[in-house]
Length: 343
Image (cartoon, rainbow, N blue to C red; front, side, top):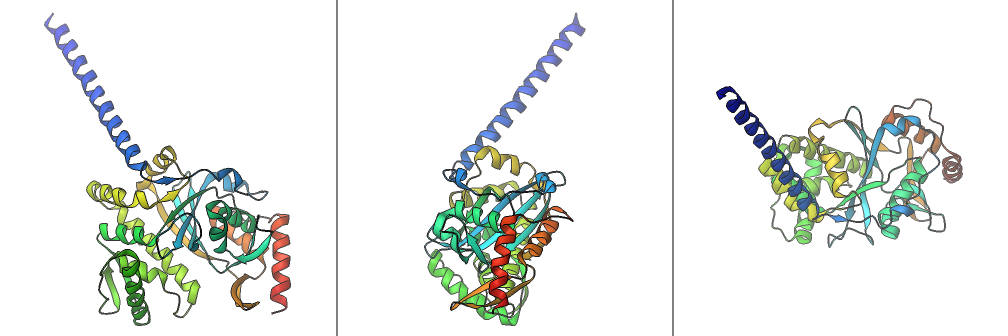
């Protein structure tokens, strides 16, 4: 009888422990959804996102997200603001490897649903918000990006500050521009961050790191700026993976209200559960082969042979070695060749 009584008590304890674990999990998930509800989630234009006719079987193993950093002096997120940062984040669903591809903001592109006019690619977000921006990316580069996240200057600054800063190598040439943009960011964000005193490798705060990512007037111009933006993204990612729960909680509290996205709470949870498994393995700027010149009194970046650039982009993102661009991309490529041949 004593043995049966002990067995019953043991079973009761197991059930209680199991119930406790379920309650803790439920509370944790509930807390997450309360936190995630602070995001500005907008799916209203999802149905109008254009994707080109695709023939890249390797793409199916990846999730692609468009990251937009908007150039808004009042930290607006949704439209009427140019996307000065455009990064395609490609996540390998199996290996969790992540690749980053910056799209140069001045890239001369077909803007669909805008009388099929050509313009700088960053104008798409200004004209039609996230839907037109993603449609433009998909149409010109044969991609199927349907998810996006938009952030503003203030959000980036705060996240880096909460992580305790990030280490950057600031050149003497970059130093004066970092300090110049720091002054501008102070006005935008209502802060009083001082100047950096010297160049070199150093841990910088959020304002200085964001200022660094905005520099475009050094050797390399906008191409170098896109590289700086990818460096800052990678530094944030690496630091966040090592952060403790308290820090991550503070970051969520601070950044979620400043995020505009069409990824809802359930989808975000699916992404977040694998965060420690993600590794940024490679990064690049696009287009690869390019020319920058003034056309109709405006400075643009022109892909040299868009079809070849798109094939190379698919190889970078998905490992596809024989991708053949669609007829739409070939049509756009012919238009660009006509312009570049005459300039």
